[in-house]
Image (tube, rainbow, N blue to C red):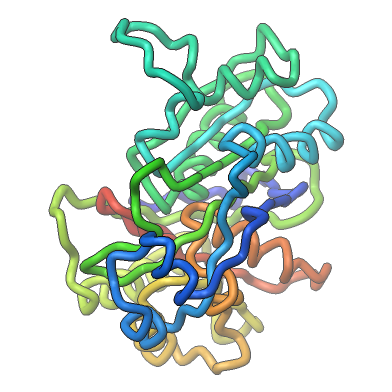
Length: 306
């Protein structure tokens, strides 16, 4: 699915993020029995450390920082979109409500209550996993196109559920606790969104070679749809902090020089799920008018987005 937004003129601004306060290396994580893999295997994948919530903080505390930043730039929000990658994050901490239809502890509602905000339409997202940024963008663009809203607040937050590992056994992906957000609006500031390409599969596993082939083709198709030539622009390519060999191959096929490939602090902060792209975009927005940013998302589901 390709989405052309060149005539819509929507912009991303207000990018913000927070990481967990506790930084631990692989040996410390192993000693705490928080790893499924051996440190040597994760080091080979490119990881050294991660960021985690401190014992006295929770998901709401983590998300409160970026949400506060968004509210400072948009004091009277009109609509809020929220995303999380772990199913356990649908609830506040504490005992679960046995009533299946209860939404009293749903994460977005809990955060809005924390900030004493009521009567604001909010929507939750989960199934798109680490492609959360792009799924938030797609939903936000639809809201701006078919409502009387001028801006949409988008927030994602992910904290390791109790009893889970910080790494995935098969994929050898080390993760961090992180929250991030942005504002999509019609106001011309920050990054202008030209278009998106999105692919989903119901399979449990996608081979790396297929990720590479589809990523390359999606970039080419999207460039054709929105009418740009990457070779004529100093484009930056933002990759998630996972599967380094796959993104190296994507770069080779697309002839991306090393200085334009961004895997942001993968050894130091690991993979921050939906926050990876927002962190690197915030760091690399340098006010260079006309520079193209190509953002890749891959998440469990399975979903691939550009």
